[in-house]
Length: 149
Image (tube, rainbow, N blue to C red; front, side, top):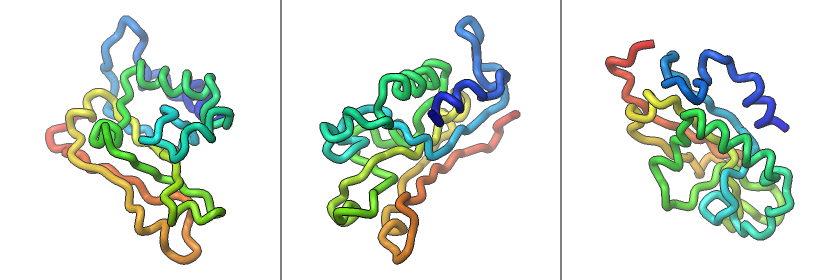
């Protein structure tokens, strides 16, 4: 699975061991991780329909939780803890128009960057364009003044 690959191949100098503090350069991990962080309607339309999907298998959720335990912060969920936010809508059954989407695109920030997070969001309108991707662009804004690598 893609997320397991990411965890197994993250450079060792970005992943602190349990007994260490984060002493490595600031880092952002962003990707179409294809992982449902939580099976709630905050990240998924009609969560009951996704319980058996590969995006929500226990090993995928465990891998995502492992990243968070290592100190990575979900930037968009930090900014919008109680808002329904999707980044992907299938092409069939008029999913975009019904807002029947998923949030599977993530920005994970190293601890020092979490404090620098100013804004972020999803440009949903782009998904509505003709012949566009099934994903909408997600973005974040960081205040990197004074940040040392």
